[in-house]
Image (cartoon, rainbow, N blue to C red; front, side, top):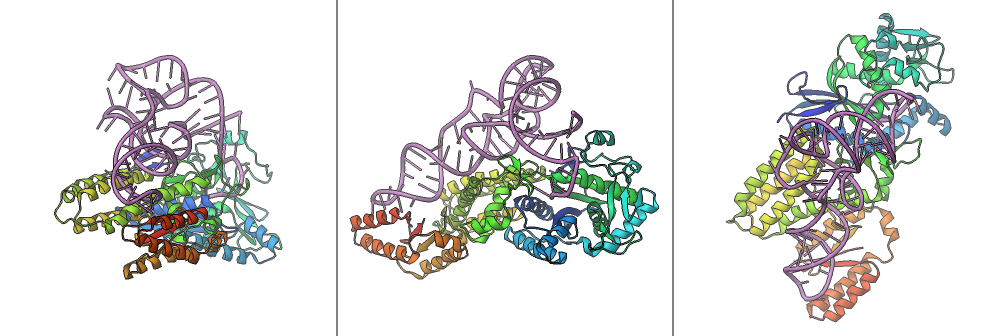
Length: 511
RNA sequence: GGCGCCGUACCCAAGUGGCUAAGGGAGCAGUCUGCAAAACUGCGAUUCAGCGGUUCGAACCCGCUCGGCGCCUCCA
């Protein structure tokens, strides 16, 4: 089945046919770098990262452009409030952005253009629009004249009359039409600016995306994406100025992701109901890599076009779901191998069925929730096959399949030894002290250490104390002195420590 | 006021004209276990906000009502 995707321009699912076979050119609106990113920004970046991954998985060569808006009123405001140069503000938050994206396992786009690096392209484009008489200058500002673009409103499903009727904007009487928007803003004496035919100034918000997408992808390209709040006016204006400038079609498919909400309300700076990516990671008791993967799972568990509500519960639910899949991967390594067994044949059927469902779901407008459902169905089936017995070769194939199909989602790539199965921090100590067990101890230990100091400080008893107790208990167990063993279990339970005796004689604990 | 989206089990969430309404979390039961934990297995909506209509047939299409949300101002 070929890839179909929902095009917000036509409001329909359409067959995806790129302009050039096997190549996809995609532009996504990035962030304005004036503050820490919140979960909403993470969602957008993650959605398009997944789309990009899946397109590449499907054999397309993808050119993915995502911009940084690094000059804008909010940036200047911030710089003024903090008394630092505005370039320091952008520098700082670009760095923070990279840190957060890295934590979420987001692959860097092919090109990450910045508005300030494209001033000449922007000025050229504005000059072209003025020349075509679809833009006009007023006192150093340049506006795009929406009446000159007959298709204005087509993307967002509005018309100028409706817009005017409900306009909440303060009317600037220098503009020919209230809906005309700024391409170039003149700089006040104390503001940064660049020389232009209209004097010193800076670009308006919408023009940078047009100039940079046309420069890097050409006048017509395949996919343009962003959060659904950008449809109007940002994307509408991009279409107007780009088409007016090139005389050609602009983006062919428009993809818009839904919001992250808190108590069903849009997460936003102005409402103050946001969680920054940074604080989510800092508050997490899991290691960075685990938190990142749980966040990915959580964000992919709702279709990208729907809003997704964030709550304390959501990450822990994602963690539990992930546990079950990593549990399977671990079991594939632990279970006894039966070279000649029924399970081997059945694996072929199970595998083919899953592969089909995976592709159908992803090809159907990137239906990641459905894909995750298929993963869990697969898990159940493999567990049953393990009961029947699987050869080492078959188990290897299962592991490879999980990794291969998890890759477009950015999930299930870790060694299960690095995955902590406990709800809040976990560790494991050796009961026998064998080399193998020691190796595991190190692996779990590293997950704890990177879990951050916040966890350690909340603990009432030390890990050393717990591990000493476990050692005593295991000695008692070895001598079948179960009453002593149970007393120790109880003692630890009072501290909120839960023990898990493993089949290999080791004991794992968690709080 | 204009335009638009959503309402599926205790919670999250697929499904959008016809095969048993996926899957996850929580809960309950069983297997396993010295006891536990973990894991695995099994169980859960005669029903899809409500009402009316179209159809041989609707959670899915149409209309109305109720409830929630978004865009129209910067916003992923």
